[in-house]
Picture 1 (spheres, rainbow, N blue to C red):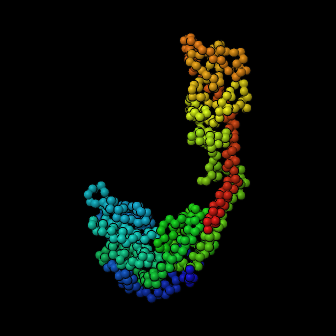
Picture 2: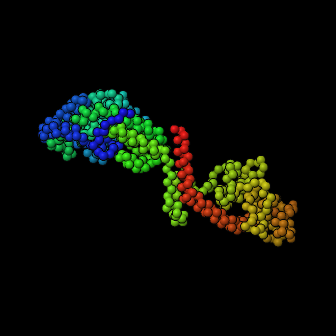
Picture 3: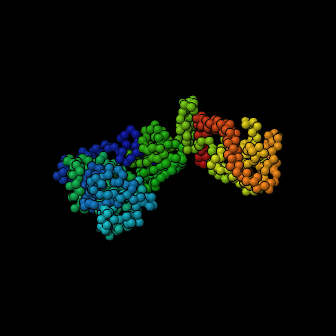
Length: 577
């Protein structure tokens, strides 16, 4: 792009807003030619000249010069909203709704009805028509005004949609107001004259300090009756001023001189937009004019980091986190745009590998666990859902590191997986196992530190009931068959053989009755026995889980992991370029 001579009298380039322009010597020279009349008496020729010029430019009968865009917007609302109860339809993102301190409710005693455009860019007839309120039901405030904004967030509203909304408001006798603070940009970008844009509205507010570059001021255009009433309300608001000619003269010079340069500003915005895209930033709004809305989530840096690097080149931006708004104006030179792009490319080519030394030197016991938590790093795996056969195939059953759900599973060859018949609410966490260990038995004499993990019972019949001839209950093997009406013969060497009792068929109904009566007691004793066996293993599991958690959340290892992820990300970006 061709080099340009800077017009910026400030020692830095301000990309925060187009209201950040500073008066130049040429503007001061124009202000020196102003009249010295009193605007309250409507006797200042410079102010009257400015108002006539803008009214003619916009195709309206009269205009009113005020101190700010908030004042001109609120004056227009107050003129149109003169008979409560009443309501005004606004875009939910608009300036008149969000950034004017609730002025519609305070000054005009009206209810604002915000609407989010269905297309995400601008309001349409389909958005507005269903929300119009008429004088039918006394429970609702009738719609008296529809307020639009062009441009909004730098996006141009199509004039075809403006014409459709105008037709809708005329049919129902509703006033249509435009916050045209940056309508100057829309006119330059589309080639549509200000007169054609403004012809669809009852009132239009035009800012003279945004983009146009005047030191102060905004102007309201409308019919003669409307402007006369607005002038009265301006005094009520405390906005009447006396010798304002020097401000009006500077604003008129800016309209004639700076407005035509906006085409170059739009070209700079598109130039900078391409640079943002190249470094991985997302553009969250269409760049139709002089604004760029960015999201740096995928670019590898935050807005604060970008601000710090730009400050070294005497460039100012605003934003926080991963979101920012970049605004260009006539005092941004091509050289400053090039410096901005150089900073972007420098940040994109340098991986951010920042490791906190203090953090790595501090023990885990001295830091809260929340310090080390992040979105991309989870705590140690803990499976709570999922099909058991999928977990088994994926190798997730690795004992301590991945505790399993409270549902043990037994896989018997090609048969479907079956669940333990023991109540799962009383069951402890158990690991999956394979069939090669099915025949291992658990004995009270087995060393608890060397025993194999407890296995569940098959679904056929899993009750561990048995009775000895002495009437005492004892646990039996998990896979020993128990038949209805069967009795167990007590052997003197049952303890040595792991309680492998022999089953003997019995046809005595009394014997079957005795076995069924003692079944509940046997199950309770068996549960108490298994609980006692599990205590050492549960303690070991708890210790191992705690150790693994500390290892996984070690600050040095986490910092190394983050650095490796960033290196991989930047490597892919560089290879793509």
